Each structure stands twice: as structure tokens, then as C-alpha cells.
Length: 91
Image 1 (cartoon, rainbow, N blue to C red):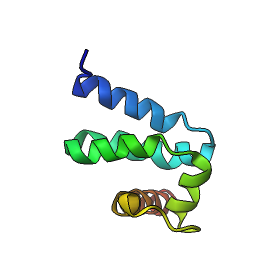
Image 2: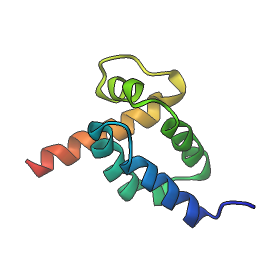
Image 3: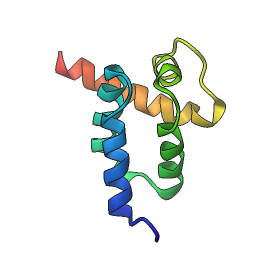
């Protein structure tokens, strides 16, 4: 059975909000809610792969504390920028 786009987005949003550490919930959850519906299929595939990574790896990548794998560099740059702008406008 093939997953519909609607079901896929719902699953990915849930997975974005229910990470292993709260910091990643607060970074990926809002990004998923705001941006996933507008992403093309290839970027959704990459984001789906990203969701399989461990939070202990993801957080240093998105925060810039450690270099991330090249395949995620552009996506994590966008996610990091989204999180920074969201935080700046909320304070």
C-alpha cells in the first residue's frame, strides 16, 4: 500500500514533534508545521531520511557545533535559519 501525501506529511510532522530530546522537538516541530506542505517530493524524501538520524547527531549539526553530512547541509541550513528567525521574532 502506498502512503498518500497527506498521510506522509502527518507522519513526518508527528515524528518531528516527538524526537528523543526536547531541543530537537522545538527545532523540527515548528519547521515541519510551517514548511513541509510546501516542500517538493525530493526534499520531503531527504527530510524523511533526516528524521531517521539520532538526535545526538542532529542537534550538533543543526546548531553548527559539528559539521553535518554533505547531503543534509542545505536542508539543515534552512532548518537552522528558520529556527533562529523564529526565536528572534518570539523574544
